[in-house]
Image 1: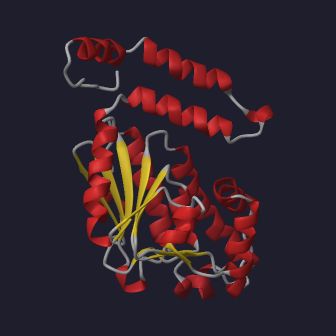
Image 2: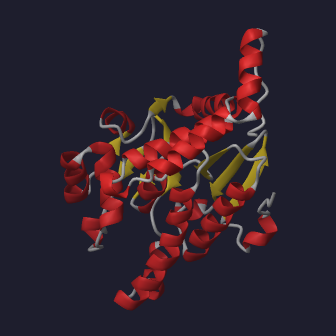
Amino acid sequence: MNAVTQEALGTDKMVVRKSNNVGWMIFNNPRRRNAVSMDMWRAVAEIIQGFQADDDVRVAVMMGAGDEAFVSGADISEFEKARANAAAEKKYSRVSATALDALAGFDKPLIAMIHGYCIGGGVGVALAADIRIASDTSQFAIPAARLGLGYGYRAVKVLADLVGPAMAKDILFSARRLSAEEALRIGLVNRVVPHGDLEAVTRDYVAKIVANAPLTIRAAKAAIGEVLKDAANRDLAAVERKVRDCFDSADFVEGRRAFMEKRRPAFRGE
């Protein structure tokens, strides 16, 4: 078990916490509406890799600090230096891609708790989550077309797979803002709740996940991940191994016994 510590991150713009089998990753740059800088991207990868290695973490939650934003995109103040040309952009993209790879490869449930602005790269971060719970004050947009940025295949595919090609074109071509209500209607988020209830609803939801069998959840996440791949690239054998692990687990024995004894099961992920 390897738990990432706040001190090891080397930045206070990302905050890591853990309680009740839940890992919390907080984008902590509220003065810039939690815009993501290079050091924050690096810390994202470290935090998620730490959560992956920590057996005490059964689910992870991403959120933004302050009252204004989840993540408002990339930190534009760094653009003159970090993204001034194609070579600099390549380096920046390598760092951000490492973070997004860590999010995509995380095999435990990943929840985005969204309030306020979720813009540009913030949408990309949110789309890396399995479940997105948003407050009714949230606003979403990908303003790349207003900045002259290119949006690569990977980012476009994730968006199009979720909301469909027509809505992906609308979002990218117009660069317009979407309300929480519209985001829910098109499937960009899973649930919209009153702003004041967001944290309580999210905590209640993740508590339900924590109480369930971790191996079953991981097998389900793996299977859904393969569904989204092209048929030729699917690793169905890996999914089958995870399913067999469920049936061979102590948790399956515990689940059966708890059902027969009419009590709540105490799953251990073993």
